[in-house]
Image 1 (cartoon, rainbow, N blue to C red):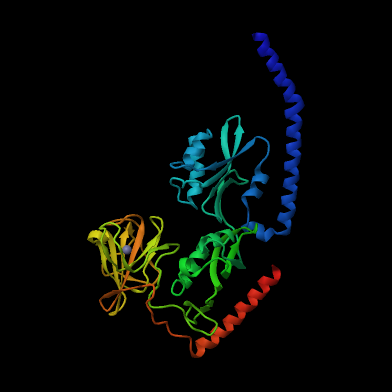
Image 2 (image 1 turned 90 degrees about the vertical axis):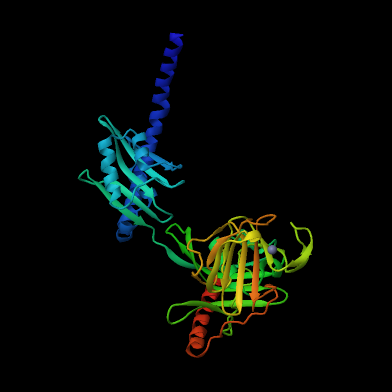
Length: 431
Ligand SMILES: [Zn+2]
């Protein structure tokens, strides 16, 4: 028994000599060469480097014998303090590190999946932190590190983002949203796109297989070429058998933004036909068997099916006249847009923050969230449009368009349009 253990120990010693030690030597060489590489780059781009220490760079620079690199992905309830104590860092050292961190970052509980990187040096008199990095978001990180005088210093590093315009042309296969996702179009752009056409096009009903969409939009890339966020749609186009709707972004001299067709007309209407993104029209206006009461009655609204919690928008600018429980309607919002137009939204799960009687809302503003409250067979939005006190079919209602561009605005628009056309040409050449 003892002999066996002794034998095992001997084996361990042998493997130390022949495997682990050469491996360590190779490792040291690899990191030395990394160090040299990053030094060369540093000399070249001294100025840039000052603002642009990436996590990777400093990890290689700091990583040498006696130090261990640890990467954490926070779980609920984790804190930096806990992470440091788990690494057997002394209370004095922990308070020094946190004190330094506090100069740039309000430390509380970490968010789920938030990343923390640590380099811990293990020495005879205990473990101490050689470097701590906390990722605040995709592009910002806070670094705490020991400077030459052995004092903790703090640095906030924000990745420099460069704007790059991006052109996507795609043919609809199975639904706009699925196609957009497959083409790599970001959710924020899909939402913008849906909002632009929400007045004129019902994505579920009007867009079918083989219809085409084209979107030209701004993307912000970090220094690794990875897209970190999206900007504005500059141009978009929908083509189906019936129509081709092109929209250009226009910035007014006062900075406000609107979209116009190539001849300077707006497709914006006083009300949107579909006050929800990504919903399926599940029940039209008209006669039907009532799903709960059973008898034949007129359905004086339009139902849109979507998952619970899907944001519901104000279909036009106006004032909230009612936001509360209303019998079979469940949680209910009513908006007055003008003396003529009113819209109602029923079966909501909840109201958006600040939505109550008397509050002014903008077109497209989120007012609540789709639900199944009141007399409802499943998650859907029951949407009603009232014209001069009478409920009408929102999907066939003819609504007046906003005013077309005139005078100087028409001239400025022509200039911006040409500029966008040139950018698209450039982007499609590079493709
Ligand atoms: Zn309904």
